[in-house]
Length: 323
Length: 313
Image (cartoon, rainbow over all chains, first blue to last red; front, top):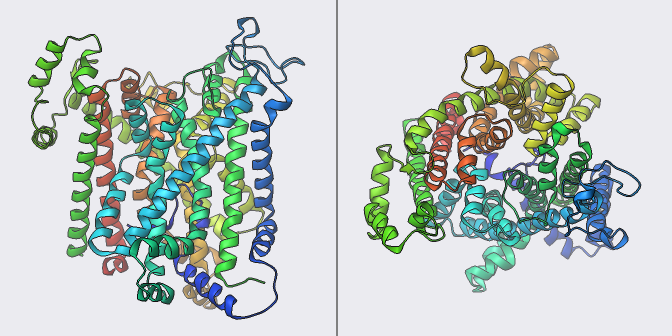
């Protein structure tokens, strides 16, 4: 395996490869900062400034918030019936009554975009959280324990990585009943792997730090050392990785929806809407394809942009540049 | 060198062993059991028991695993009752077509990504770089089936140049080249987004190295430095990148084959998923995983041969 590999989140832009060695600087920087009594703005404001300095990331955050508001608050402003089909209204082009036209079942597509966005965003964020929590703990334990435990845990990660993830997710989804929580579980079951590798890499460099040795000297248990000291110090890398996981999970969810796995109708998601649009592609119902397509691509680009901004924040902190 | 290869092969064997355990575990995680899945919910208890005995499913699990492994190693991966064919026969028929599709897509993607990445790395944070980075990010943020659909809209509906399905595959070289064009293009575009970012950052790292300054100081022009020095050094990681990318490419082929009806393992898998044909599902997963393990092994060994530094970790 190459050196870059464990540091590279699945699907992360190569430009965001995280520098393991540099995290050491973060810990040291924090320690120094605590002893020097200089009046400076709180860290979160510094981070916010760094983040906002990246225009691309700021635009991404705004787009992401706008889409979230659209999906979760939109139905309050623009209520539509998304459970009873109306075959008289099927496949209508956009009009004043239906701003984005209607689906083959006669659902209003603008309202459906909100409903589908809810489950898409829920699955994306939930899968990223589950995968990150599990993967971070796994990687931290492997890196901290070292030796035989490390070898066993990481061979398991290698094994799971060699099973092409889409095949695995579809298989798990087929074996189990595809409800939303199980889809989240299926996506996390492949998505935690790269987190585990990233966090293991971080831990390998963190565990030799003085404060870890000191904590051990105080007789702290292994588990709380990992959970209280190692994981929090690898948090920067973990958060950037988790952001990219959201984007990956949304794409993966769309792919498995395209392959026919997902909640039964009338529930929907952007991937399923896109698939409907594809099935009716040759009928020229463009309004069934493009709204969902634009929603997915815009959201995923926005999340990647936010990840880029968070990466800047972490980088800046690593360089000890608090001011 | 020999020690490195031996260690790497040993690792691959461990991973292969774990893959078989996972696949075997999934086989037994079926709701209602394998026999029930084959005979359907209406089968009598007697019929279920009879087939279970016949298939050796009443034996202890470790024994079943060894028997299953013994059969798998000999190429016997079970029987598809839905298609009335041994799974190994199906795999032998479909697998070479996957090698063709993914091989072409990877080769073409690399042929495009390397010059693109070098250009972007050289002109980093300039207009050209931003344009390509933006385009690649958009490609990267698309589900691969959307990419395929856009290819169909442009090259089939708007400009009727290429067929939108690959069902006709296998009727001579002329038609094969035509029907393969869109699936290969789709799979390739996704990979270009993946590879060229990597080449770009590798080139940027290399441009900061001392040897670049030395070469420039000795009067070498940029084109010579880029092609003769930076490119050669940036290509090294690409070899291992290909190894890492196998699971992504194979996963992508599942979508592309389902979209274009290209008769490869992905389509076989998808059809098996629709008809709940479990022996085929598991056979495909086992084969693609083994292919990925062997592929990464070959890439790593090639990397070690090309770059002696990697052997002395």
